[in-house]
Length: 214
Image 1 (cartoon, rainbow, N blue to C red):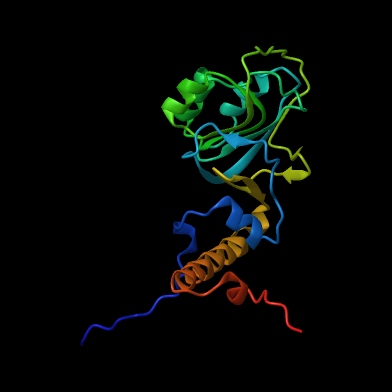
Image 2 (cartoon, rainbow, N blue to C red):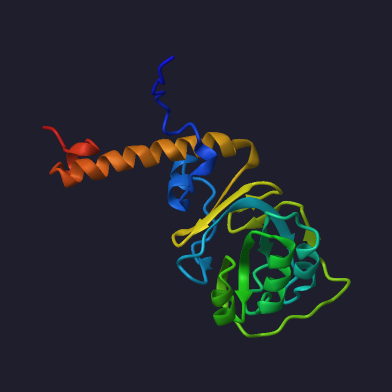
């Protein structure tokens, strides 16, 4: 029996292809974008992992220590600091602990420190700012692990998909992940075609149907 060439839908193996935050945001219907001030410590850092939400009290990082040992390997810690931005909640010690636990990364609406060392380590850290001010560890502080949090105007729940890169951070509800992933791949394929057409001399006005008619 002779071998046959089987054509494959380019979007079939969607789970294996890295996604970009901007593409995912658009494919999801322009939802899920976390505040744009949350940036990677280095532009090469990226994340694509299920969320483990963490609520930390203003200026206190005890719940981050607890989160490192409560989250499952492969999850990304997503931290709401109650807008207590002027504190360094995370540094080299916690990063090494998270790496030892197999966690995927950190997204924090707040500050981190030891930034040069974190960049050298290369473990993905997305933060609002770099800040040296120290934090407390109140055992009675009002924090939480695993329950939904709100960052900006976005709710982040346990298991929601976090996609983060140099452009920003987006959160997609767990129930919509496969649909959004497939739509993202379709957008990537379409944009690759657009780029080829532009290189061959077509205009964006024609490709996107933007010319006005009278």
